[in-house]
Length: 392
Ligand code: NZQ
Ligand code: ZN
Image 1 (cartoon, rainbow, N blue to C red):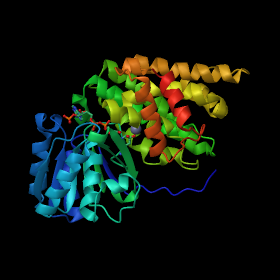
Image 2: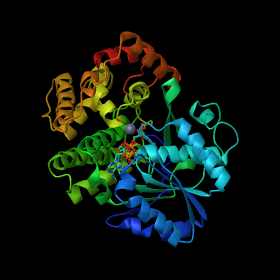
Image 3: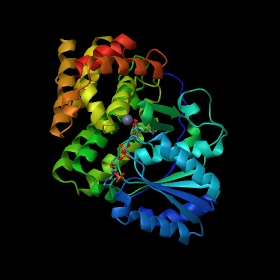
């Protein structure tokens, strides 16, 4: 077991009609003028945006609106947001949306609170010293950004998708009403479930130590998300299943399922970010498309964990043939992805990269990871290329 610091400053307000509590939360923060940040159309169409703005104003604060965040959020809108916040002297950001809007808000928050180009942080040229306080009304269970320290931004013109992790950006509060996720298209619900699973799987497949309690939480979380993802496929309005998945989404990426290990593997995420940067796919679907190829490439170097995953999460019977058990676990996970209509290859994801594009993605992934990534197996550029090829 490794030493660890577990830091989760976000106040979570969870359950039905909890968005009605925004006013009180804003008053607690003592903020005066907020940027209300949202996405393409869902928040407006459902009337949620209007209700949120009304609550902000009722709490005695002013609201400045900026919508139009797209999945794989763009740096160009971040720059626009920074300018708007500076002009309007905004002192907090309130998100109505999911991972993309939260990540865009975090980047704007850094840009307002620090001198210079915010992209420097994503290119790891320097570290931020501050971030505007961020509150969230979550509308999709997926990225876990409502409690995480991550922000992932795409510089669209360069096809670059980069992450910046810093505790400064962990939201001050997150309102999570599972009912708000009932309007999601099935594809986004399923894609979100994959992302939630992957945030724990990334931490689980490690050669860097473990804790029994962390493993138990992780395995319980993975089984819970798989069971409820299947329920949601048939019953998208099932409140309890929505609630299980939504809370799992936050716990899966706030650090809880990695306490005591080395921080996990996260190569699948880095491999997917290149697919997302180049082909603009839904993040969770991209993860499903690449995971099986990654797993088959690395499982022999992390056999104990793959066997534990197969028996404790997928339900494979133990046997002396450990490699066979591990492989059955990988097949079982892919069968689950298919069961919820998620892809297990790039072809099924709907992208057909050329060999040159695979090489470019491997090169960019290698640069983004400082030359190597992984704990189950350390991957270099040629390994990344091999996995992309396997995933075609
Ligand atoms: O823009 P609108 O119209 O709202 O549509 C969104 C979007 O098209 C829609 N949606 C959201 N809530 C809805 C809804 N549609 C109907 N009803 C609702 N209640 O769903 C689509 C996807 O939204 P998005 O915010 O992109 O989803 P998600 O939460 O999966 O975020 C994905 C982004 O998060 C990053 C990903 O890379 C990706 O860019 N990640 C961020 C992380 C972090 N900050 O810690 C970690 C993750 O690993 C991930 O990398
Ligand atoms: Zn993710």
